[in-house]
Length: 240
Image (cartoon, rainbow, N blue to C red; front, top):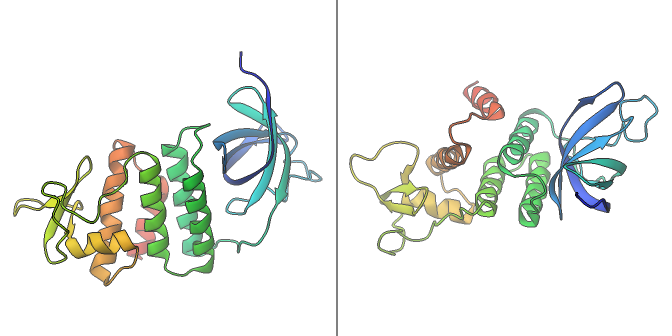
């Protein structure tokens, strides 16, 4: 039997919510010290509920909850403010981040470093500056927290420094190796792209595009072929 616990004033963000019964909500939240948690917000859909105007996605909150199982009861929620509300393309990117966490991060698995990266990313998306670099930083942090820190400075086979003029194939299990003529696909990139990705500063459009496609392919290996709904929408928006 799980012991009942109480968590007070925990920094968190709402990832997703859906109705429960007539007046309540189930909240998927990402918290600083407790990772992803599921919370029942009783009465949150009532017109006069104190929670109704607080539980916004992409806004910093302080949450208090109690419970003994996977689903705890939300006791209090306070809006911390200071973040611009996301809109347009930035809003879709925010949904993309949330879907990644929901799909790849188990519940009750603390990831304080990833929480900090998420918070920085949401702030960056709200300012609408350097969106590509903002997303790549979060994706790298996500892979690292899941145990797949990227090697971007040296060849995984011989230990030599990455040559910016050469082509490399990024092996998801090893890292970058010198590409053969027969190697093709999103996992094949220039050495300059790897170096730029390591510094999160992109020297040209090609480097930015290859970095995006490489991260997309590496994350896909962790999803085991399951598609991301928000990524499909983002690709359609980019085509437009």
